[in-house]
Image (cartoon, rainbow, N blue to C red; front, side, top):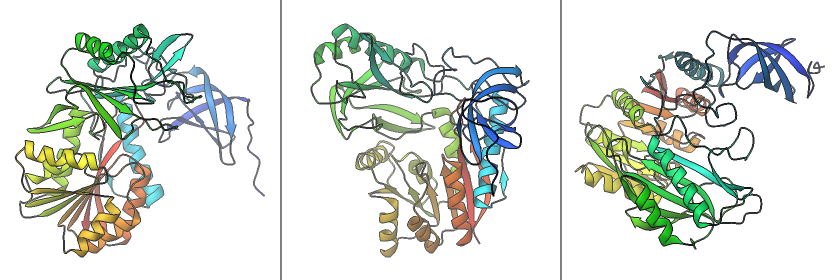
Length: 455
């Protein structure tokens, strides 16, 4: 018979924090029972209040730090304690990098049973102001328009004037749109009632061209005082290249809808990675940290180890960013992406860069790749960069059946990465090395590139 948990909801406990979990929460033990405490770091002794109890663990909120860890620092952002955007601002950056290396290593061993060399996380020299995209919810409180990120564990909007991980131009867009909505009395979305109009503000800024693209996401097509909104944005935002209105009238947390109108300018900005040019629209998937994106893609290119004779499959290719990096070193690149608009952008980006040895197919990878395999397509190298849920098993089976020499797996989720590597290991591929890359400083997220070779 299993013992009952030694804590109950509402109980105050004193804990020594010995590690961090994959969400960046402190891990302590009370009478041998695991308790997770957000905002606590290894080396802390804390007083925490239990908020939920499960069979094998509990969660608690930090009440006070009794003894502070030598790795604990004061957050740079005044909203860090409330905002759910950054989980690790209170931890020294060098320790964040060690944590992310440990998260990847632990997931591979625990979930995948894979014991390979996990390299030191590749960090940033200046881990601030790195995001090229902001998408913030809009709300109304006592007649005042609010725009910012959600408070932890709630949908209450923290009205942000500045976000330390955003490009300053994105901060300016958010503040400008918020003020225009207030001044012109444009209706703001009320989430609980699914009524009102403006739901989110999206800003993209190019680090290389400094162009700024603004998207206003609305719960309906009609935008009151549209011309005034457009004119004020043009007057207030330097380097503005386009304003779009995106329509999302669905309930739920999905930010962008499928319908979009250009209100002014063009619906994309120019971005550059290395010597490659890209057109990036509001709905494009484009890595949010351009400096680290080059680090990530160069590592993927190194692992692909191309000589110029290979056919490479780039799966979940988005707007063709990795594809075009690979195309300059390969005989042929075949990109597969489920979002039709992204495939259109990928083809345009190939034209912009005068790359003629890349072709792009629309559809889910688990549908398109088996079809191409039956049509005698063959890959010498496969690169996959799936969403957080990882790869479909049908796709992994087809990759194994194609027998490429190497597979390069780019992942934003160590848990699904470990699961998929385990399958590939059982079906003919040896994981050789894993390289974590810190794409998202001060958050618990980590990107990883893994090299696998055919047995």
